[in-house]
Length: 86
Picture (spheres, one colour):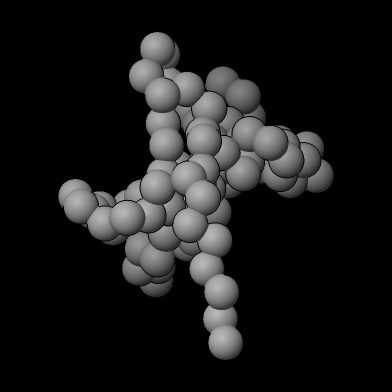
């Protein structure tokens, strides 16, 4: 039988606001996983580590977005279930 852990999750604070996930229903959002994803990234440094593995050969004068920014957008989009574009 599956057992569930109903303990609240404490996330890093946002400004002076405490962020807590308690899973007992109420007001719900489909993008709540973004908080968990962001916290996991802050704790592991995964996006930074991945970005450090990519050699950016683009001309800096013509570059608008850093590799880390584009990688973050892509990983989060896929993880949150947003449709990929062809």
